Length: 304
Image (cartoon, rainbow, N blue to C red; front, side, top):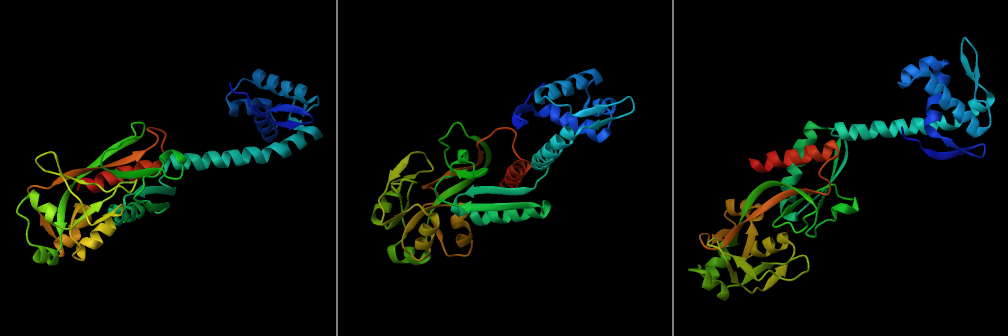
């Protein structure tokens, strides 16, 4: 049995479990009935209460054959500790709700290119769980999941932190694209070697360094240099749409403008790769229901 000593009364440290049991006795006015409610034997409860009185050096209960009533000291102690236990019970109920119900505020970090798609996912999830609030952060920089501000993150590419817990969601193609206007002006590309003669728009890493290697579908890489480098895929996409050059983008970014005819694939049989998307958390177990529900919803969403 756990003994917790965390408050002082009448100059002595007080056993909070015994105080909790005292509240039950005062409410029922019976040690026997309180023992039944608490799931302990009557003698064990009586000894615990006597030990509490010895700790404080004061009688807390008037005991008769018919009932038990608190003394003046007992009433004072009950008045002081009852709000503490009421608050504890309220917190326990709130935490139980977080464990079992999809409620509360969920904090999610996603790469900017998929923020719109995740926003639609969240809207569907909130239709199913109207008590759920979501704070969605779209940031090119990876959030620190151990700092406590973000509960779950969606991350693309290779995961570098082996201590984080991840769940595979999907693979998305990455391809080279350019606007029809740029291709009409610069000319179509016949092969990978032609990239060196074109304006290239490069993605940059978290450290700001441009990614100077583009993947080949056959395996390996081609070295490139560019006229623009940004860690914002949205900025690279905007420059590409305005005829700024050829960009290597995820389908999440290039898909809609490609469908509208605003972009064209460049060397689609030669340049590109697949980008893996994971849901990532800092804890494997004991997650709030809202985190579990979001990850399950993301797995369903990206699998279709």
